[in-house]
Amino acid sequence: MAAAKKAVLGPLVGAVDQGTSSTRFLVFNSKTAELLSHHQVEIKQEFPKEGWVEQDPKEILQSVYECIEKTCEKLGQLNIDISNIKAIGVSNQRETTVVWDKLTGEPLYNAVVWLDLRTQSTVETLSKRIPGNNNFVKSKTGLPLSTYFSAVKLRWLLDNVRKVQKAVEEERALFGTIDSWLIWSLTGGINGGVHCTDVTNASRTMLFNIHSLEWDKELCEFFGVPMEILPNVRSSSEIYGLMKAGALEGVPISGCLGDQSAALVGQMCFQDGQAKNTYGTGCFLLCNTGHKCVFSEHGLLTTVAYKLGRDKPVYYALEGSVAIAGAVIRWLRDNLGIIKTSEEIEKLAKEAGTSYGCYFVPAFSGLYAPYWEPSARGIICGLTQFTNKCHIAFAALEAVCFQTREILDAMNRDCGIPLRHLQVDGGMTNNKILMQLQADILYIPVVKPSMPETTALGAAMAAGAAEGVGVWSLDPEDMSAVTMERFEPQINAEESEIRYSTWKKAVMKSMGWVTTQSPESGDPSIFCSLPLGFFIVSSMVMLIGARYISGIP
Image (cartoon, rainbow, N blue to C red):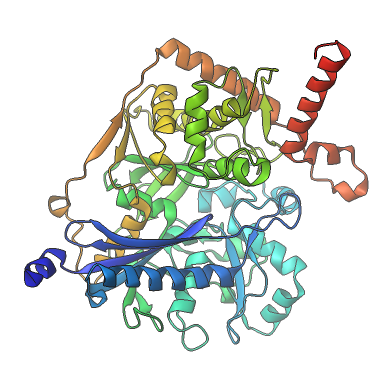
């Protein structure tokens, strides 16, 4: 019996999935892609100033160790031998920027998160230096100049943090996105840790030439970044180094993909034209464009999709990025307190069944694709005395769906061939009301795999398929069939279009709220940078006041 059980399991592969909201470690059977066990730890986000978003790199690293240890304990309780884990893949929140001291292993500042807006004035200063007829930044990187990407965050650290400046001067500083920080730390840190990244993460820094697949000297000079602090760029599937501590000491780390690329691999979108949408802290629609870089005319990014081996070809993708998706649910929980757990949102939305004309544009970090409008801020509009927390909850879910519709429309215009269905994944896809709303608003079927952990699965696939590991076949014939849940549109096309056009009107009203002039200077735009909660409370106070004045009890 025991021998049969062991034979069924076969080699296992682990995956670190380090996201903006949480860290997880998951273990898969490499022959069946079955998820055997996992553990998750929520990560704190710090907001030291309006528009600033930071995380503690040491807390992130500790959460990875904790998740690995706890998952290994759970496997032990299932009588699964952890020595069967043959490789580990890493998937991570992209763009988030860390600088640390290679001699002490200590971070020199908190991680500056991808959502962070502090660099808007830096972006505006730099944009003036790009010739109008030669946007070399976009042509080399596929990215617009934005607060979103790592180069401007790194520039801010170099300009404003003395510890970083001193470490660079003394050649002690290392830069990396979260994958680099984790791989360096897990493979030994100050004792021979491997300082590397993969092509997908490098392509989100704005320092990487996506055509030559190298750090670009002209870009580094433009952003004033010393090239010696950058990690070595590797493929997404090769052995980078071995785990140097913990229950899995000696296991190779052999897969590395930015989270959205990992989800593309996990959804098995290996063909030109295949696309997926991931619902996490943000929302990210990626379409595989094969070996060619396709440049968008409708506000999408061109990015590296994956390179699954040192000698394997690179694949590219078009990407539509939405800053706030799951983050709006966390905001309703942590800032407004209208729900105690993220799962409660579905119950509230179900109770309402409609937003009752209420529209929510969660532009907490400006608007990403397809607008790239940093001056936008969150608004809730269409409020009446009838509006309650259930309607706001419903409007929050609709907002995620409307934002997806906007980037899907842009994708269809760029590709010329409309998607006939949308493959989805990510934590929010467990919300059936959200999935049905998405089908209604897109007016195409939404298809969800029964195992939604495709980001971690993609990292595991890359790790297991690496040369020298070879326990996971990426041959389509060897792939396990995946069972899918399908959501069909249930409203008529006319109603879908009316709701969408009203949403677009709300989006227009969210723009132009802030200027980059500092609030400390006495600029009246300080009012415009007040948090969204201020406007909701103000609206409610005005409503109550109006009722009082008009004699309504």
